[in-house]
Every structure is written in C-alpha cells, then in structure tokens.
Amino acid sequence: MTTPWPTTSPAVRDLIRRGAELILDPPADWVKEIHEASLSGDRIRAVAEDPVLADGIRRTNMANVMRWATYTAAHPGERVPIAITAEILTGARDLVRRGLDEASLDAFRTTQAVAWRRWMDIAFHLTDDPVILRELLDVSSLSISTFIDDTVNAMSERMRAEREELTRGSHAERRQAVSLVLEGAPIPHARAEAQLGYRLSGPQVAAVVWSMVPDATEMLEAACDVLARSARVTTRLTVAASATSWWIWLPTHDVGTPDLGDLPEVRVSLGRSGDGVDGFRSAHFQAVATQRLHAQLGVRRRQLVTYDDIRLVSLLIRDSAATEEFVDDILGDLATADDDLRTTIHTWISVQCNTSRTAELLYTHRNTIIRRLARADELLPRPLAENMVDVAVALELLRWRE
Image (cartoon, rainbow, N blue to C red):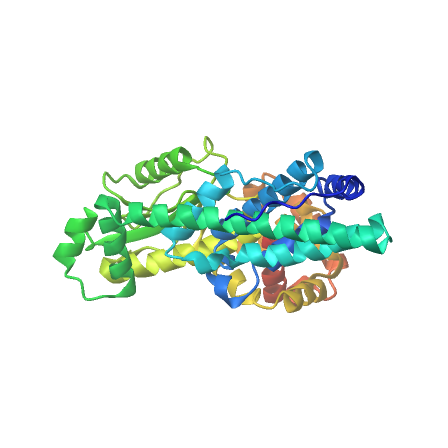
C-alpha cells in the first residue's frame, strides 16, 4: 500500500515556496558544484570522459533542478511529478548506445547530495524556529529524495527499453560487428564486411560527427553527407554512438575540405588515415581522442579538428596548472597582447621565419610584419630568436586554451 504524502503546515509551505524561488536563479558556483559532483567518481568515469555524454548529464541535471524548483514554488510541500523530458529520453538513449548500464545513473545521486547541502543552507537562512525548521527539513528531504528516485527509475526504464531495441535488427548487428573489429576479436573479415556492408581493406579514415544540440539526427546525417561528398566517395559506414554523436568511416586517405557552413551546430573530429583493419581501428581511436579534446578546448572556435591539430596540445595539457605556468613564463606580456600580434608570430614561425610569406598569408604589408616582430621582442621575457621553439609551443597552447 502506498504511504500517503504528509500534510505540510501553512508556515512551512510558505518557507518552501520562498526557498524554491531562490533556486530558480541559481548562482554560478552552485551550477559548477552540481556539474562537478555529478561527473565525479569511478563508476561514471566513462561518462565524464565522453564530452557528449557529460554534456547530456549536465543538461539533465539542470533540467531536474529546474523541474523540482518550478513545481515546488507553485505547489510547496507536494510531491513533484517527473516529466519524461527530451533530456531524459536523449540521456537514456546515449548511455545505452555507449554500452553503459544503470550504474551510470549515480550522477543523479551525487547531484542530490550537493542539492541537499545547498537546500539546507537556504533553510537555515529562512528560519531559526527549531520546530518549523525540523518540519521544513523533513518535508523537503522527502520531496528531493522521492523526486530523484522517481527520475532514476524513469531513466532506468527508458534504458531497458533502449537496450531491447538495440538488440534487434540490422543496427544491432552493425554495431556489434564494429565493436568486434575495434576490439581486435578474431571475426573473419568476410563476415564482418557482410554485416557492415563496408569493405575493411584499402584506405580508411574515421571521424566522430557530433553536436551539443539534443536529438541532432538530421544534422549529423547531413554532415556525414558533406564528408562523403568532400572525400569523393560513394560508400561509407556510420554507427549511431548516441543521439548526438555518430561514428563514420570513409574508404579514402583524404577527406578534402568539407564545407560545414550550413551546419553551424555540428562538429567533426577527424583521425588520421590508415590502411586495412589496423587503419580502421587506429583512425577511429584517434577520432575519439580528438573529439574529447575538441570539446574541451575548441568547440566554439572550429567546426572541424584533426588529430594532427591537437596531437601536441594533448600531450602538453595533462597538467593544467603546469601548462598555465609554462605559457605565462614563456610568453610574458605577449600572452595578453592583441590577437593580430600573436597570430603574426605564430604564422611567422610556422613558415620558417619567412617574413614575405607571412605577409602573404595574413594579407598584411611586409613592413607591418616586421614591426609586429619587433613589438613581440619587447613583450617576450626572452628574445624570440633565442627561444623560438618554446614560443611556438606556448602560442599553440594559448590558441587552443582560448
């Protein structure tokens, strides 16, 4: 038999309403703490390391916080009904398609702990009457924990439904075959190619096509078409890793210069090309690694990022504090100079200190380049000619950091 929901006194209902209204406009440090807590812990490391999954968890968490606060402000003290929102549906689908189970829902439990601490801070500022405070904490504790339980149960049900769907039909066969090839399992090539509808011999290049926009299926499909046209190929292999992230392989060494201008919300992270099954695997793993750093450093600036673009940076940013110190020590005041000056130095070094070529690439007069080089020497702790390699590395790190 269902336990009846407790009746709340008018005084406590008023306090709960006032507290919930404060949450509707949460301070930035609250939001940051919730996001960090939700993606901490060993059980959800696979989620935290995947930029698309991590972004989905953040969106779902904030949607849940706003759902609870909005309903509670209008109906203080009452049980908050869940809503099967787009965030919940997309989140469940993405987790299952990455091969994750219900343990990944721990993110919502850790969020609950942070939310409860913040709520207690609010409660103790609302009243110092011990009787009213006790009732306030009892009711709100039940409300928050029940809402999280209901949400986790709803997501678990959606995950079970998604898992059942994925175990049926050609999509499941294709994904299973891809997984076996990537894992190096001894699956015969002929059988794998038959299940994939794609040849594994010859040149291979892989990419992760993704977006931070929920339910981006049409955009991702269009982006895959752009890549195939740019690469001048008529066949491709695509696997829906999630609702907002697709894996794609193309039988080529060169994808050309894809024009993604009509798809501003789409990002493409590209691995190096290779040959045969080994190339199929290595190109994919490079694309996935590129996607992670692409999301961390360059999602707003560049739509397409290659493995070669971020290879050096990925090796250097393992220790963020040391990276910051290196950039500041090497560049000095140049680190905060205007972008034109830093771009000039970066370009000049990349073309082997050729001033005329730098001027051509930047559509700038040669004398302007010379003046910028002199200005850089004034700002750098050490002259550019004496420390060129370190300056180039620091500028590359700064370019991505921004």
